[in-house]
Image 1 (tube, rainbow, N blue to C red):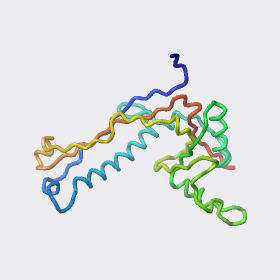
Image 2 (cartoon, rainbow, N blue to C red):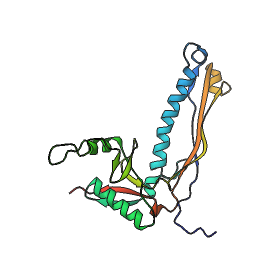
Image 3 (cartoon, one colour):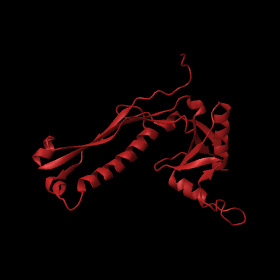
Image 4 (spheres, one colour):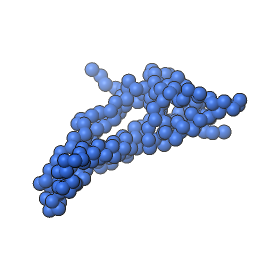
Length: 202
């Protein structure tokens, strides 16, 4: 098989950290603090994972982010830039399905009123320019993409391991929680997969 498309190869990266709990808190049977800490740590790491997969520079342990690999599509308005991206992806042989916006960008668009003073989106912003809207915290540039061609490469999902043998934990009579996971993002044939939007307001 001859693989000559402009595929973006992915190096899967590891994200890990070690928070510690006091042994008394860990062994407290009245409140499941270990489970709660694990949930909070996973949430915090998930945000770091999102930012790394979006904006990582590819150096050292950082992944190469999706945004830097996306070709730019320009429009005078958000809807115009989305239309341009859909056209470019379509002309390249793909089909855009989703638009990713920061929550603040989505809220601003959702609150927009027409010339008659009525909301442009009275039923909310679930769809924009024929694409499903996805809200992504930390995203600074909107993305239009084909969800069937953008992959989260999960070599290993989040794993939480408990240990008292970790030297700082043993010394402080604490329990260490090692949280780790290996992830990457794949953009096969990125020219027909994804565009980042540049809204050039008049």
